[in-house]
Image 1 (cartoon, rainbow, N blue to C red):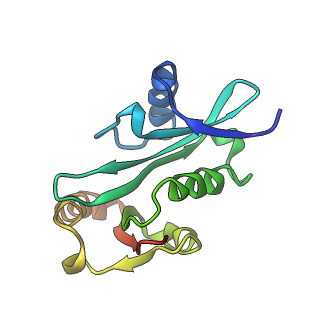
Image 2 (cartoon, rainbow, N blue to C red; image 1 turned 180 degrees about the horizontal axis):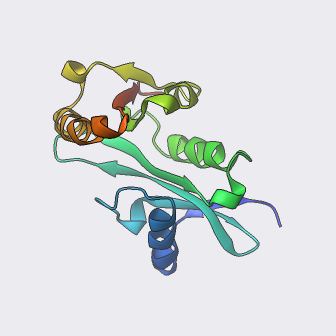
Image 3 (cartoon, rainbow, N blue to C red; image 1 turned 45 degrees about the vertical axis):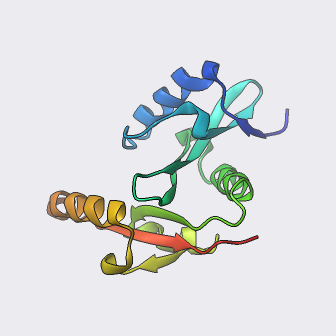
Length: 147
């Protein structure tokens, strides 16, 4: 059966949480109505969401694909689906430095910390203070509104 990307339902919530844990993504602000899931043969093989923050910014987030299916274009299909659902909206994301080139393919560009919305300035400052001990650096990217 072909890959299908669809809005998440309440029944998907346990599968979303399981995949979040499996790929070790942050568990903050997870609301299943924000998600789309990639499904194949009745199994959820990937997911992603666009979430809102108190400062008015919107974030492309929680992009995940089951490890056995990574590198097969599922993540790209999820991102394209989420972007299509958000026409005319400026989107931000935070990612590890080594993923910058991946997100540039979708029109995202790196932002300097001072140019980032308040939510992203706070979280990246905090996360980077902790993760620099492990050689990990988080950056913020922005995609301008596309109609």
